[in-house]
Length: 94
Image 1 (cartoon, rainbow, N blue to C red):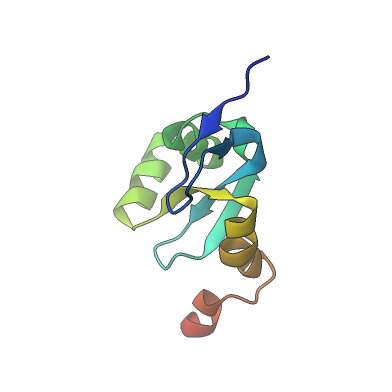
Image 2: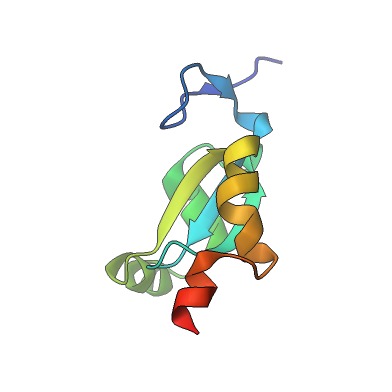
């Protein structure tokens, strides 16, 4: 079975989609959801998996929420601290 390769923003070479993570971030950039890369082939499909209702996705988009594709290393640096409650986003909000 062929593997889907993707180019991630800021990464010099393509990586396997299966080695990536889709991450849902709020308007401040704080990660609130994560799933393995091969769960969805596009940003739109990932957003639909995170937020099934169209009106909720539209509201999130208006409020600055984003779906990002991250490498494992990017996930560890950017999203991991959010899930552990150690990110700067939470400190600023508090």
